[in-house]
Length: 314
Length: 280
View 1 (cartoon, rainbow over the protein chains, first blue to last red):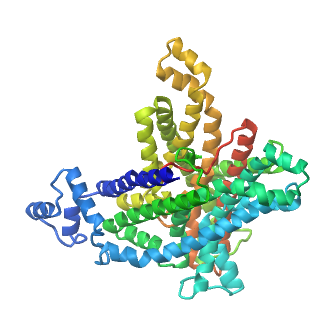
View 2 (view 1 turned 60 degrees about the vertical axis):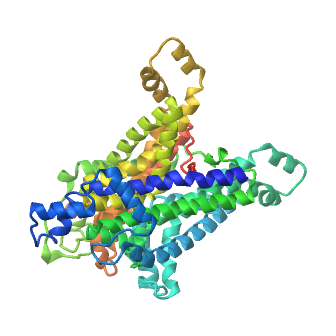
View 3 (view 1 turned 30 degrees about the horizontal axis):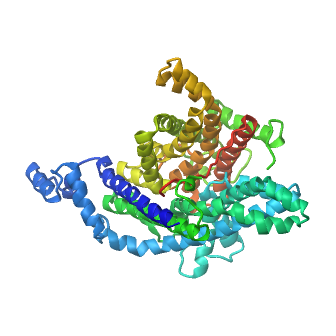
């Protein structure tokens, strides 16, 4: 167990370095010279070659890329991600004010998806061969094929326009989180539900279930006491992975429900070509995702100390 | 779980819907009653009628014509965005699985890094740096989704490498190239096929999300998700403006998913869509 924890924590380091490298490398994708971009003030001013050279030296753009990377990484470690072109605030402050909202939203969505998915998966195994199972199966198929923005708009149409029970935008009251979180959770819920169901069915085919049934145990008792604890482990191990999907989906959802999270921030950044902010966005979403996965794994290690680093790949 | 068969009602229905969408997309120029780009301000925001089967949009453009033309960009993008990553992923996956050792550990590290950034966030950032256009969207898609393929292919190749016939081929002096391309890849072709089909559905959904945000297909070009986002100010009074394009995406993705799953059950390919990655 101790070996697992150490290896797992150490394995994060190269991934974090890689993410920072990608975030840094993205600046080279941007068309045009950053120094010219800063100087020309959206085409209002034409800098001469000398001014550009001076600014390039000031920004360190004349150095080779690996020196630039090390310099940049040194700043990032101290939380200095640069200044947003668009708002003029530091990127760190922007992210700090928007990230908690997205995290709350993603967390609610993940809990909903996990609870709903596992619940429905178990229920459909209990009811296997009956009508309820088929309905749930169709429901999962349905949820996996609906674009998330379409679903969210339909929810607004039903809940806010026709029934008028829930707000369609903003998160001033806590019930503002309800519709975004539900629409964010549904596709993930379907994935988790199908996965749970498959793992349960796999487990039910094993010999110990036959033995238990031969001993006269009730099927439901067996399902909850023996099968579920065995089958649920791989599902829980993947919950951290789903966090990434939820984080990505939140961009669309935040846009529709006017939630001021980092998704909305990123869209603003794309609109205004705010490169430092986009870099910060990649770093923060990547870092958060890796951190959450790490936490989930350590938590699972606590519950199942038998886990080894190698069979953790599934 | 019940296996899906080729004579299921849902499979036949799925094939029918997909064929309809493909044919109408290809034949759009001949079927459409109106020019999908031609605004008609006298007949804007009309409800479905005999003249305009699906009504008209904000600029008075015929929705039916736009839906037919819109399927083109969706299908084109979907095919390209599943084929390119499949190609790249297969290449990297076989390389890592076959040669193992250093290459393998490097590829595993690389895929952990690429999976460490949520794919939608990664794509948004790439589109943001390159500027919104179709090519930058495709590049972003390629960079984020090869990982899913290469991971699965690598596992398949690792399994295949242990087989006796590969050993035999090495003994009779086949080159690595020959073994990989003439013997291993044909053996994992079924997995590739199912994987590719199932991935098309997911690609359509995530591309639709990005196009909806204005980062993919650019306006005058008719596209289903762009049509939904164009109607965002009016859909409360005219719900058909989002219902029709939204349902079109749904039917397309649903039929592709059903076909993919039936194919998977028929070829007996079991793919764990959800996989844990090491070190993440």
